[in-house]
Image (cartoon, rainbow, N blue to C red; front, side):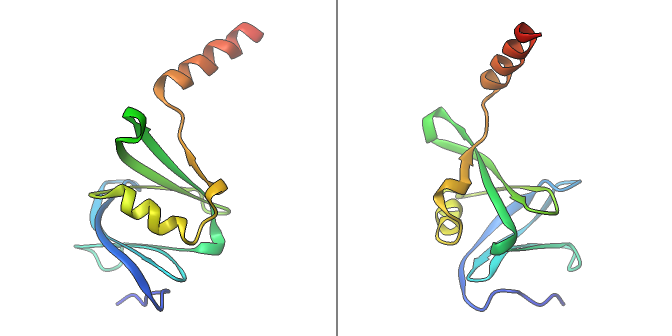
Length: 123
């Protein structure tokens, strides 16, 4: 069994991890870090201490009405993408431990196209 890094838990919610193949489990947000545990496989877990979190990236649609997924970018180990039933609740819980200037929106589809078009014009 995996030992949790948290001593106090703020939120536990069902979620999906998009690391490799999709896996379903639970997200646990506590005082020491962000944790994801797979429902079926005990050895499939992700533990990210708050000191290791660099940015939290949210994919926002319809002017903030819908947040389909969010990602946690770490300082050393890359980016982990998740989706949950109530993403606003999860992001608010994360905001207690991560500074607001490190919580950003991802680029929309049209923003990506606009950047590509501008970079082609510069060349």
